[in-house]
Length: 332
Image (tube, rainbow, N blue to C red; front, top):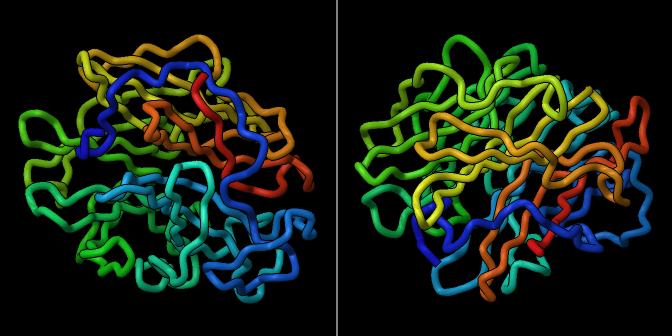
């Protein structure tokens, strides 16, 4: 496997079969301050107070995989937790897998909201890549929201020697006017970095860095805009893959309505102009994703297959919210 982020040996394509069990489950209602490594019975009572979302799977040097993800919990004084996302708190955790199928949550918190600049609110959507030109170190880009969603989000970063202990870097990688979320970074052949991200009410944008991923300048236009159909309400959460023969495949989340989300896809020759595929890659309707299939990542497996991990909402709470878990689907 190519060790540059988001480069794949083959196009994973459009056909995925949902796996029978979630990869990472949500904390049950009775555990509002769980240990990061906690495991719970599948039948434990869950009503959407806790959640597990935003998977980012990294092939680890020497073998195995580390998944970084966001755990949603109640913020003090706001017991609804993920069912009142504006007032929830989140933290970034990790899990380990030897084969990309069975995941074990790891001890320790990778990033707290306080360390990430969000106070009691939310650090979300980790994107972990090797530091460009700095062998052995890692950089995590993440979304920081220091209040309700109306307050807006910025993209910030942290660095690590081992992928477990993270030190937040000064400044904001992308911010200013607007609200930015769900980062993904690809390394271009000319030595630059391109960052793709969601922008509130606009769709998916991109920005380019000339200094190895510390400062980014927005590129003109939008890469993906919402359009009538599967992404009529919003398009966000890009997962961008550089294909071996040239060009790119994009997987992204599209909401057709506030209570219905899909994993969608598009193709591009240059990473800037994208052509949407006509039908969803993953649609809601299973045990874990009865309402929504959203923010995702792709992992290339040892047998040269691919698995798509995505955040799944079962729609069992009021307004078709519910329990958010990390589910998966295998290419086939």
